[in-house]
Structures are given as structure tokens and as C-alpha cells.
Image 1 (cartoon, helix red, strand yellow):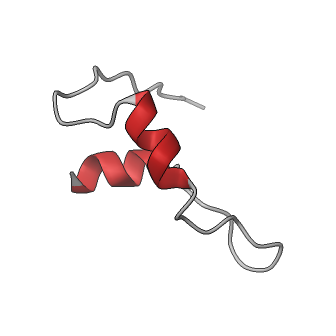
Image 2: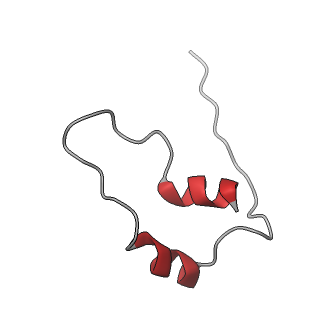
Length: 49
């Protein structure tokens, strides 16, 4: 079995820690029901921005 590790550098447009702290309070928390998140919400926001 082969496993791969993904390493990436932060892009210029990625969120700073202070921006993430402000935004995460507006995002929903994971629920007990349903499928768990595959990607972190911070990674998703970084991809959108």
C-alpha cells in the first residue's frame, strides 16, 4: 500500500490567523449526524479566496 503526503506552501491570498479567528465564529460546527468533513473549513475558504 502506498500513501502520499501532500505538502503545500501558503499562497499570498490565504487567510491570516487573525482573519480566520474572525470568520470561524460565523461558520457552523460539525454535527453528530451526517458525513464528517473531508477538508477543513479553513482550507475551503482559502480555496475560495
